[in-house]
Image 1 (cartoon, rainbow over the protein chains, first blue to last red):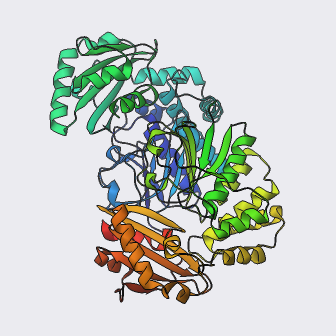
Image 2 (image 1 turned 90 degrees about the vertical axis):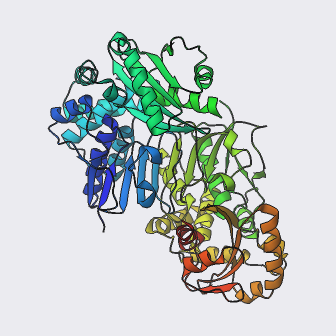
Image 3 (image 1 turned 90 degrees about the horizontal axis):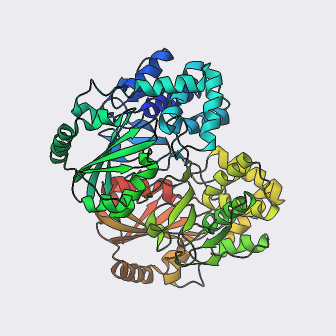
Length: 308
Length: 308
């Protein structure tokens, strides 16, 4: 039996890391030689959760094939969001809650995707289906992932299943859900000491839409001014990133987690598709998106449709 | 709630039709307005099963959007094997047991793929997970699908889960598994009264491999001579199909269901990739493939790798 590496997407968020830890623990309980790894270091939010539950951050890797051929993906499927040599690997399983695109295998596999708010909600279900008990710290990471992905249930991606899972996991993790959740989210909104380069890469994903490559970054904040005070610097770095990586468009979504609104900053072309997607007009490269907090549900599908 | 159409792949086999009927029945039991349809008429094998369990063949459709936008796919995911307007539809769910390729959605969905021998094995599990009872005739169709896809458990795609499911379903369907199964398989091997055009289209799928389009047809028989007595006619029609549909290669796999071997017939280019895939040399456009009965496990992955 060859070793199995389990990981979430590049620029890992709390679900990418929490789901990898939880799924690797489940696979080990089922007798597999599995290890959770990550395609980047934890964010401050994720690190808060890891510290709270006394878990080590997963080892960071950038390619797999020198170690093994067998992998399982969590919280992503699109190859451009995955490990660099993904196309050469044997993908045994995917557990995810995103759209499926730019994903291909030569062999049948286990693929479990459900339209819920968080991968960890599905993984909790897989523990139950397998009859495996969830350890306290693992429950804490899965809870943290659900809080993170659903912004404490405020995101439109949140489903009743996520709320139920989070409550059950909070009991196992022995934390008070609202108190722990808000403290964890706030730990991730400390932007002031970060460079603009870091800020636009904290939680960024690339998408192929029509014949364009679109980069969509998101930052959470409790004060939008903290982001847009540095608009000129952000624009310069986004333009530089577009050129360096052949992105056609770079979108930064700054999300106010208390008000549940976002402000959009756009650099690149064609902006007309962005305006069409959100039914808005950009002013000074910006647009206010009332009620928008979810990249997956309120940004990517609208953009994808606008490019098709 | 808009109507949901549920269907399997083009050139439907017994799983494509049986799984669609079973999954539509499950969705209806869960309160959805679902209808099983098909992308073609039943084979003689499938018709035997439908007649035995007194079920009507699903209505045949060739496009969806004039009726509804919402669909669920069973037993396939690759768009070129699906309904003509699949790219314009909203795919709510996929239940499948094949590799994933040429599949893309704009939105998150329910996707359940497991590396088992038959879609109906997974659908039987979904009934159990939902706590819904399986009616006798539906159990009969799911059983028929498992027998068909695994060639009565002889295919290397067959897993212990398929065997267990088939035995449970046979009990619900009130049939003797081996007796019913062999009778159904034999009903599908009556090739003598079929034109070569029909024969190469009974169970044929297209695959994109590298930059080539490869058509892979399979026929089951109890006598390989019955197929290859008509080799010259088969070659002429396969060449014509290549030209008409821009296939680069056409492979016909004639499978002896009693001996569990296959004989391959190949028309088109590049044949070198076919020879490499199976470690064989074609003679008179043919090669004997001992022990090969599964297109999915013993043909498509080997070809795909040879083209990459």
